[in-house]
Image (cartoon, rainbow, N blue to C red; front, side):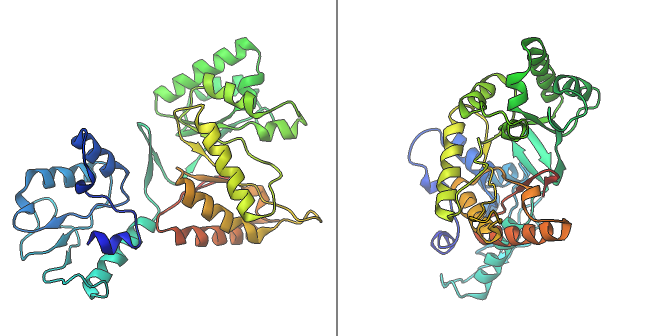
Length: 333
């Protein structure tokens, strides 16, 4: 079974544990899995460890795709799950029952999850991030964050540029307000600051200042320091973005999301055909919580942008796992 599944997916089972705290390792693997496959037989259906692990996965919202290798009933509590019958399976990948299991796995892991588990927070999808920006928001950033304490949003985006450049008194109040929002469940995403810096034509903004902001700003996620004028070659885009994420991740214990900007040719025209492949390869290498792309760069008009999103999603569906997409503008879908 492991050999057949490993040809398509990353597979873990507890025989991979060689030393250390095996309980903690099993819990970690179960929580991070895209699905868990209990194997029911006359021994496993009454084995407390197997039942505990299946129940643990269920409590952490990890889908169970059970199989049966002996003619036994499913344990109480698991009888409602579709169970693939592999009694008498001889190991052939072409067996119709194995193909049924593979289809179940593919449809499960490619389906958009109901929510993302980020640290101790659970973010239901799709989600709209309230954005606080010195370039976009009617209120000044410090005042906007203070006002949002009255009605805390599910998710909030704040700019590292604004945190860094506010007067100390305002900055300290912003930090207090962000901590207050996080304490009641708001997920805080720290933007790289490049958007505000570019709109204000502030060429002094750099990655070192972002890193300082990462150190002082309460956050649950961060966006990497993005290249606003990326190269036109897919390989170079992938290398640049991966380097940026890995560099910035060293400055925070929170997940860092890649941002992919659209490259242009010598005439200034957007190279739309490069974007889906670049996003797919970056996702494959980093497996990020979400991958971000500016919605305004995906074409002129709603229909053009919708077609581009469809192309990106089609490319991502070839990964073998569901990759959330963060549109810088509207929402994660």
